[in-house]
Length: 162
Image (cartoon, rainbow, N blue to C red; front, side, top):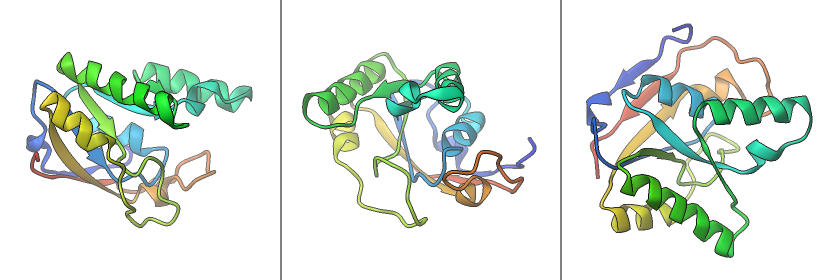
């Protein structure tokens, strides 16, 4: 792979059964690099704006996310946010591996911010393990607003399931 990912702890991702992969979120490219190294399909709950943005750029995003098997979720609050959690629970009930960014959005400055509680609720209600992941260098590879990524090494550390 061009970006030569350095991956540690991949054995911590269960080969089958429901699992939630919880990662920090530094760049749009996180949702591309991580699934490339995980030995099973990772379905991300992705903000619905990726599927509804206007223009050619929006169309490319939509096609990319559909091709990657991502699921659109409305993060506007209330019942719409509840629907996102129910979608995640349905996927987990079918034994899926889902990817979630607990902070709810990309970090604007590379720091880790307080996570939202939906991930804990999904883990408790589904019985799924949570595998924590630390992503490094993706903010440098493709900062917010940059279309063409820089070639640089990506690092991912998969922790032991919680």
